[in-house]
Length: 566
Image (cartoon, rainbow, N blue to C red; front, side):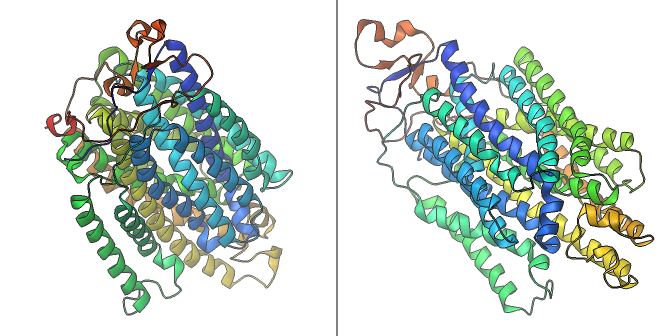
């Protein structure tokens, strides 16, 4: 069996003092703030961006391109982090994200914006996976819950600032500044990470799984293209179209080739033996169905608010805050409770029940509903998600070999993002198809140029300027297109609930990943550094703990993924 490269005994050790842990955690917080703030800013400005660039039919691609790139990048960051260390991949991820933010701000049309959002996704995927993996490296699973609190608070702060900044920038300097704002934040985050993220680097002779990387990327892209075909082709799903049938064949061949490659290479990108671990398999499937059911719904709600209720850009951002508040509240509370009790299984079960009930409630959305009612709907939705998302990541990290923390974490998140990509594509296809039909009926009786409106160039301002009854007709068109679509997501949530009931219960580890791999110690007296001997690096001083590392390769001796959770 193959493993991520273990640590050689002559590598310098990192001394994980409490100060060191919080310094590293601070670097992760700064970088996660960059990506989380971007999501709330751009989501609020999206209807205006799409309207100005005349891309209403393909608005889902701005979201899908980002998710697809995140999904492709995740396994790469996870595997390379295990093989070579996580410091340099993390810095690369920040750099890519910042560079792409500048490019997206200069986009002149939808294709350019989609390309830069994809590059942003490559950086965002690294920030997400490496942050989760580094926390597992420096904090034992039994104590990790208390670190979920600051992370939850961070997302809450970005959820408040994002809509406000997104609304103010869109209505003031312009929507392009929603991307350009990331440039100074990215530079600051890079500087903090450069000086504070002092982690060991490795040199491994294990071969890179290039065949697995290529087949994974082709298969992932093909899956998303097939599910998005209705929005890409005017003819819809015409199976006589050689392009569609050829794409399906290529996708299936790529999936089959990926499976074959991963069973034969020395260091697979996503080791298929991980699926022998019940905890990994169940949490991965929960993430897959949750991604399909949740992220697709979240993508279209800001558009619904701005178009159906007539809310402005800033107001629609405020109206999304209850969901973030619910998510922050339950993620912090569940993290603290898990650290105190050591029990985690009940939280995803309860969370998925709450999410399912919230989905049913959301089918009653209408253009004239009370915003208090809407706030309660999405607060419940966020509360349910907060109980699930971080808990399943904790469960899978606790159940695998410490040498494969990055690989297992990235694989688990990869399938969730695949679900999100497919779910977003399907959901936006259902939504836009309904919307186009509804808008066609509205515009059929509208005098040419009335209110300066067209189906392709609808923005919240244009809708508000339209004469009656066409204004009400457009608002009803959005409401009637979105609300019934939530029924299609409910079976996925029910499936996730059934899976959560069978999630194995494993005692939370009290050893951090780097300590388990022999890369770090928690007691400075054990490091021999005080005697001036090699073998330890106390990283409370500014410097890079990766210097002086020895090459290392060979399989690990502990295969926890095969012996727990079954």
